[in-house]
Image (cartoon, rainbow, N blue to C red):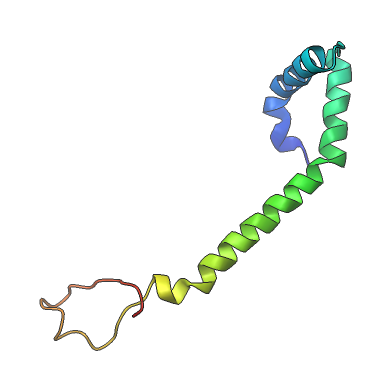
Amino acid sequence: MDTDFFKDKKREVVASLQRYASQELDCELGDIQAGHLLEYILKEIGPFAYNQGVEDAKAYFASKVEDLAGTCFEEGLTYWHKGAPGSRQVRRKP
């Protein structure tokens, strides 16, 4: 997993890991230890969260594309029914 996007937040995450270890596990982690733990988590566990996020996004967009015709539909041959020329309105398909 590419972690370049994460570099600007790494210090904050390392500090959070250190606090968690101290408060929840009753042990102290140094900066290097917490950094190595973070790298391990990102490489071993991170892909599961990433892949689930991709699947969730795929399902979300698939549902939106599936209903595209119902979401955006323009009725044809309505020039004389809508009133003023040039007034267009997008509405749901009947």
